[in-house]
Length: 382
Image 1 (tube, rainbow, N blue to C red):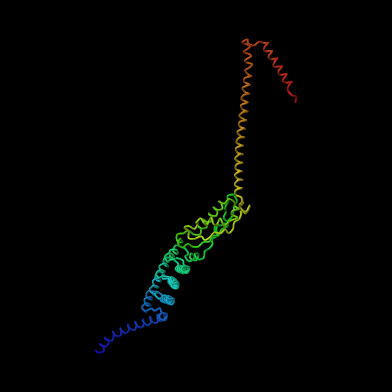
Image 2: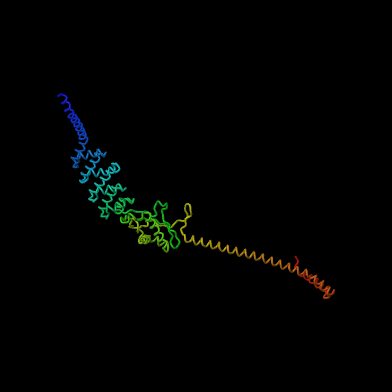
């Protein structure tokens, strides 16, 4: 009986002991699994608790990555970066690159004394922005004393513009060829007032206009406006010699036109790189240097053809009139023949009525014979 009671009492003790042993073994395994990471964090100044590490394991978050990034931040001086903030970035898409990008950008911003928080970088990254380029652009703008705020920089980056290139262009202006190589032509074609055709190539030096970078026009607009201004300035020149003697006058006139309005750039200078008179003859279509003379020649040729057409019309009318007169002569001759045919009838009627005698008739015949003889004598011999 006593043995039975001892067995009943010892059974719960054994169960509790087994459970305690299993729990202890599990804790020991967890401790051994996280002891290395915990020691790294402890000696790096980025302390984490075992409960944080266990929570990461339960949420399937790589603890080694989170602690390593926090250690990087603490070593760089960012002491307020917690593992919870890092986990919030990782758990969005479970992509380690997201966390690495945000932490790297935060370290760069902290080293440059920029007032940018980890939450700002996280929001911009998941909005589709380029976090590292944004921070580098902010650092470059801060060093160059450019008034570039975080909101403006984020707006420029999210608008699809290269914010880092824009800031670099503000510090170091770049050169744009006019016309551009993408247009398929290397020279602008313009004509002066005297009709001489000139070929011009310009180079435009621009710097970024941060205030207009979001809504401003691009390089293509600058190229188009400068090309239009050069063609207009050359077209208003009296002779091509004025352009060849003072090409800088053309560039100053174009520059004073305010071509950079509502664009993402500010025009620093416009330089005429090359200007020449168009050559005569070339590959493919014929090249003409004196467009004015060519136009005058074509106009004269057109006037000549028009006058020839008018003369041909008048000649046709004269020929038609001649034919009409010939027909009229034939008509009158027919009338004469008809009138002559009525003479014998009139003479017969005169004989019947007694108005004409036989002697009168023979006398008339004699006169007609004399007239015919004289006519034959007076004709020249062949």
